[in-house]
Length: 409
Image 1 (tube, rainbow, N blue to C red):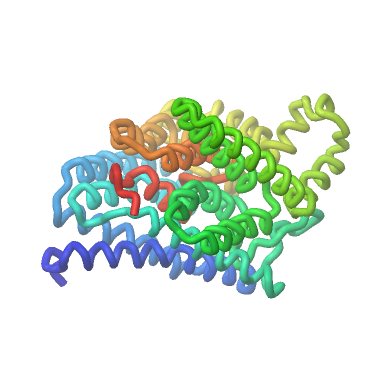
Image 2 (spheres, rainbow, N blue to C red):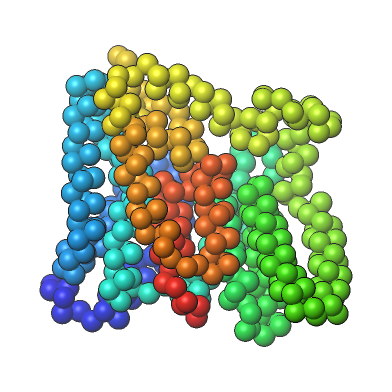
């Protein structure tokens, strides 16, 4: 089939169809893990073929930047595997190849989708991002309503995960797409505004995790301050007073809902488990690591010690995620994107991973909603598990970064 003969509108539909399959694939993967004990290679294959499809489109519509990046990164991959082979042997290559694909899915998709967007083949609209959000919420909230959901936590804590498997990933997606809901609801009827807003709140409360709730509060706070500044400059004092009063009322209601939510219960359970009774009790490395970072700082310390013992080529090109010591041992991931990329793929891999973001994004003009979402992406990539290196969350993040200036609909 000659892809050049397909109309750009049809190619765009094919791309969006694949993007909207992501939540479906996540549900299928979750069921497979829960009932079969492993994820389906078919889903990994579909994600791989989507990347190949984007690569072929970039070849046909020849984008120099994408092809140059693919060439340089391909050379890096070759050197990475050569270093692993000589330092660790052939037994670690397969597991490292799997994780390498998962990690670098983001920068390749980033470049390929961005080049297609620049050539007018792919367009991102606010409503598409919100449709994605509603699809994720559907598979999260509806199973909870009918008591068909999976638990967010295996022990102690409470919360539902809908039909998803990873709490961190679904939390990140709800947080990243949340700001666009406010923009989408601007021209909708009051009934639809209230219904969809409550639908979103239901989703973030169902999970019982800190991330979507805190992201929601950050989003509302930024919007509130931005709007207050606009009204203050226009000297519309009545509107300022009304906004301050209504905001106080909203936050009181929100706090009332919060204390009866899984989020609040889990905070109490965690504090009781750590025997924290005051703010001063929290101010220790152990408590901060457990309560805020979920022990990620301890994993970071262990990974750093392993990294320090590696040779210079491994430090530059990466030590991978597996070692051979009589048997193949997978290292515990830190689950903080910046550190996992740096330690496991070295200085060169780290630079290649983030190069597309900074080359493409720094010149763009973004809406306030997009800037909030981007801030949350960078913040959560540090605090909340894998955001950029998880393919599902990574593709959502890409849509935020490469969205064309001024496309609001």
